[in-house]
Image (cartoon, rainbow, N blue to C red; front, side, top):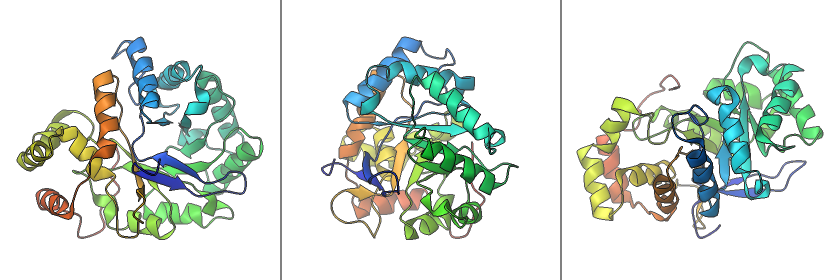
Length: 299
């Protein structure tokens, strides 16, 4: 792992530290008949073979359909994957979170999750959600817990609950065209050595994705490096920051979804792409970093 960019999740009272590739696999829109199911399953399996061992899903995706696809993909290779799922905020109560997790486990065909996240903040008190997560952890149904779509003030509240400092990650939208988290949220997380999981690292389809992939500077840099624009965006999302040592450790893991073998292979190859300071400055000029706090971007 040390030869490729990786993200380290700290040890907990229950689990040793773990290193994960800085690019994983998403599953949003899987299980919705947009792509043949066998292709989605094979893409996930091929990703595992290429070292993209983190697989992210959620009960929301396809109303559980994505979890079923992931479960099929991992049927005979569960131990190869670091499996992540997420609970709806209305399923995050003292007892409802237990039931939601158990339903996810059933769809996934496994008896544990490596990481379980609250999908976004909701109306249920966070201390109640934390209590449920700790019960799931004590029962061996989840190994770590975290949150998703939490802005700086929200994650600070969760983190400062009794036991909240065991929060492993915050999964948030992050790509070259959406850099708002760089102002306040990422610095807060880096100070506490809490990694981010960046969803939609290539933006979510449509006009914005084309705006990024067809940007003249993106096209020029990708051509100079002999890579695809998508690979450039992935390499940018997981680029190193100042506090990192030289061993490849990063603090953002990108989780693009790919249902085609060729896209999976391109995503895996992006782990080998190195961006120097000059390239990062060019991308900063085309897509500037935020100068002030912005509302958390969510899709």
